[in-house]
Image (tube, rainbow, N blue to C red; front, side, top):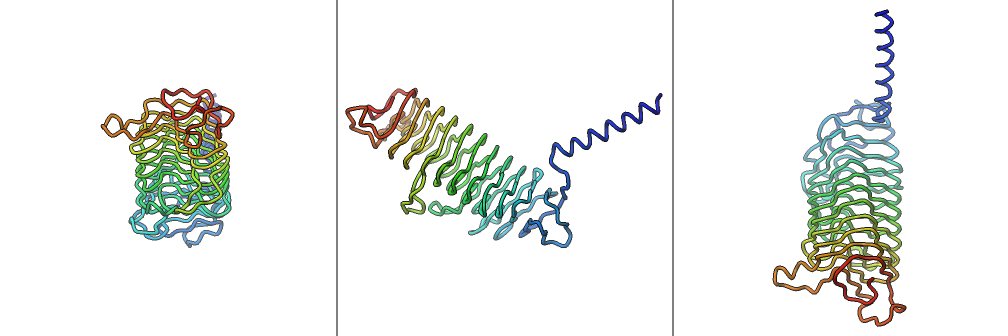
Length: 331
């Protein structure tokens, strides 16, 4: 009877072990001591690693020049809680994601000009990853925490804190940022340059200039972009110098979000054909408290300032909770 019980317990433990591996997605993974300059591809370039499709890091990769690690999709790189860092010099990239359908997760990238640079054919997944204190030039797109140049990528449960100039840049189209935290970045929190991107269930607070911006200007050049983006269920509070949410391009929507206690305006729209629905914006124009009134309001619509009839409004405002505004069109 005891032997049967032991045998049954052994079988149960074996099954649980298999299920645990499946849950973690570690089947077929190889643990590798990554080094500066490694390229993770279907044909692994180092002689001491096999052609695994899932690489699990075993240590930090620190003080790299150039590109620290390149990941080519459809491979998966699990940092396993480790950190990739650069030496802080110009042109450095923490993780360069190329190819199609790559996955990078579970770690930290810091002290690079671009923390994570997503290019290639897109459809990459970036999750459970933190980009902190990555520093680039303000007017250069290819710098900051997460720089997404390709299309149809997903950033889930990422953190972008203390980067310069921007925490997350969405230059490509059809990208998604969800369940993430973007704070204390030196210039802007999240900037959407591309079309049909979505930011949802994300906290973008305490960024220096603007918490979330949709724009159609890249490196001081006007581009035909920044359209059909969706911002929903986010917080964009307590920015230091400007607006909580700024819309500078056409055909976008902001809904179910909060933009309160910002230096100038909670939500400011400088463009047309946008929908701003069911948001909360209270206690903005904090500049008054410092004795320097910068003329902000909870909600601001520059395109509709001075409009006398609702049918002439260039943007749609409905169901918003606010105290101050600069246009009859804002409801």
